[in-house]
Length: 195
Image (cartoon, rainbow, N blue to C red):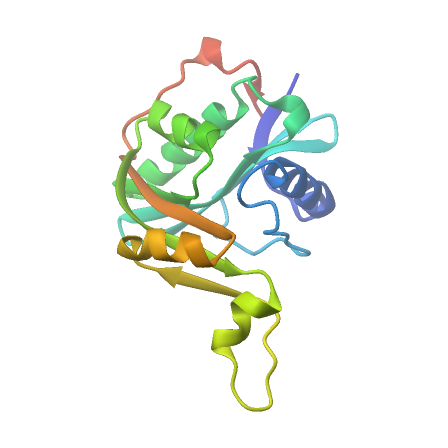
């Protein structure tokens, strides 16, 4: 059994562990945080089982728009409705604050893309994340006195074929949007409860 509640500072270690393990089998496998970024109070929700964070969703607000900064579920607790419940809870909180639209940026993981589509999100735009993972790939960015070993770049989608031929790691980054008023989970589907 799990419950939803606000993030607490004492959750940080468990929050970080859940995030790392949840991202490990995704295109964000190397997006490791060693400290939890601070977000708006009330927009950091966790699912806990006992004293362990098993799911989390952090959002930020800019006017009547919000962005999902992180949403992830621990691999041992997937397919229990946790992400669904986290999104519904954060959507309710955003609506109270006058937010009309929520967006999320993600990469090319089929499971993740399917989840966003299933939650009513629609893809609005896309571009490329390009990683220069070897010194040879990063060499073009060099300048006197610097020896680049790696790099991370944004690029336009029109360059995808060319960049995939040159770099081993290229991801399509997508922006999904959804009205905050759209909720997709009834109380019976949550498999947990709100605290």
